[in-house]
Image 1 (tube, rainbow, N blue to C red):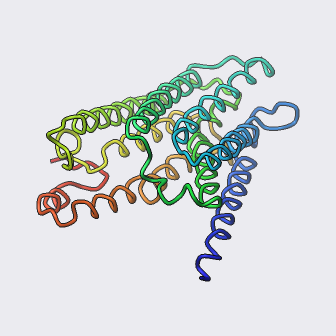
Image 2 (image 1 turned 135 degrees about the vertical axis):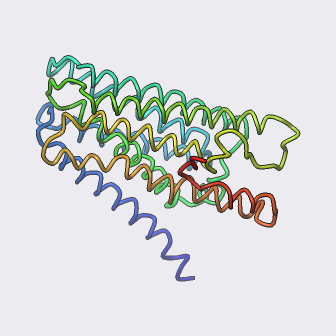
Length: 297
């Protein structure tokens, strides 16, 4: 009984703490960045991210649907970054340099591709299994939408810093290295998603688990690719950072921790263990294939 009463309070506390952490991060990394009407663009970006998610949380709870949850994250990336670019160009009259154009373009390509893919998958499957126990709970669903808002903001923090500083730094070796990492990670994620989609589309594979292609070197190659591509974004942004702006390098670390311990790997590993835990072939696959970082040989 006590656990049942305390749970909603815990979910609300997590939501509040999440917002406060993002607020403090926005203040910290905004030093030396562009402002509009006395407010840093990074702070505005954070407010927009939470506003969009909290507004859409309402119909999600009322209609008990998660179908537009992932799509909301993607649309928030597009809205936040496009807003920052627009204000920088129109208010500050600061043209985008090559680094900013590449960072903005890379994130747009990634978010349109992934958002479309996830939305199509939910429509095809009819529901998102992650939300089975979350939807009925007002506070847990609010926490979930709040965490998504934080994910968008913190994951894009390095990019936001790069887009809101006035710097004429050349791309240099570090910048091009970051772009190479993004290309590698993006390609890895896209190929892994394609291989799994093709595998699941074959009726002969009903009830089976994928072990071929990139799924032979990692049990979650799509997530590995996503972590690498965001690392690439942060590496591209590093040369124009200074002082407290380096705190924004928490972005790829946050992305890895979220994917590995919260929303991705852990949940799927638990689900797979329940489904195939007694399957000798699955146990063999687990012994021979790393959870996350791909094996080289």
